[in-house]
Every structure is written in C-alpha cells, then in structure tokens.
Length: 176
Picture 1 (cartoon, rainbow, N blue to C red):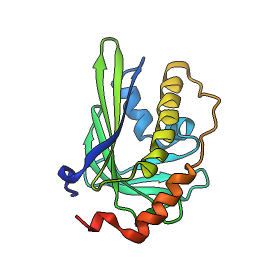
Picture 2: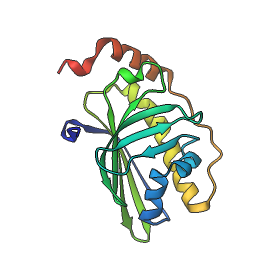
Picture 3: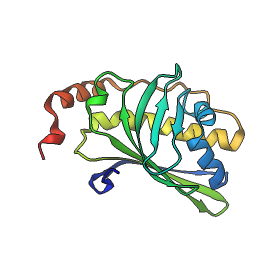
C-alpha cells in the first residue's frame, strides 16, 4: 500500500449536491454513470483498499491507472492516478485523488482533493484546475437534474504540456 503521508493537497474543490451520499458514491464509482458526467471517461474500480483503479477514455483505452487507497462507502474514495493516456505524463509520479462525501443539512458536501508527493509546478497543476471544475459541476448537474451540462472540456493547457516535458527530463521529485 502506498504511503499517503508523503502526499500534500495541491488542488481542492468543494461542491454541494442535492443527493444522498449513496447516490454520489455510485456516481463516482460506477463506470456507466461516470461516463455520463466525466465526458465519456469511465471509472473502473476494484472495490477494496489495494484494488485496481482505472479511468478508461471514450475509446476504451486506459487513460489513468492506479491503486485504491481508501474504500469507505459512501464516505471516502481515494486512489492514486498515473496518467497514461497523454504522452509523457506516465513518467510523472502518481498523484492521489480523494473524494470525501458527507451530509451538510439536506445536501451532500463533496470535497475532491488532488494531492502530490512532490513540489508540482503550477503549470502542471493548471490542467487539473481547468478540468476538475467541469467534471464536478457536471456530476452535480447530472445528479440534481438527470441531465449533463452542455460544455466541452478543454484539452490540457499548453503550459501544462511544456511543464510536463521539462519535469520528465529534470525529474525534480528525485532531488529532495
């Protein structure tokens, strides 16, 4: 099992959803449902700590893979992510994506945290900062209305791609 103590939160999103924790949990862990709000990407999870995590792109190829770190239905789901579906990204250390789900009044508070084990440049974080809001807003809208938003996810920012190329060459995570 991975040592989560070496990961530091770098990106945190909080949203409130008019749903139950069980509905949010299913949305986060069910491949068919996740395809609807994750812009065609399907989450595949082996439902246990230490289990496999996969994010399949719309063509069925593996976009990201990792290990389930926390599996506590319907409260906490956490897994490592290694992005395989974008050139060079798979050479970066894994990040940790965690969803914390809790009641807040008659709604559910969902906190999504992206954590890293190294000092990730802001340019690399810019990709998640542009992508996660669209994913989380689409999740909220789908659960509350049964429909998804009419938005097109943006590709990775050019500065992110350049920063990844530089990091892969320099490997700053090895220079601690």
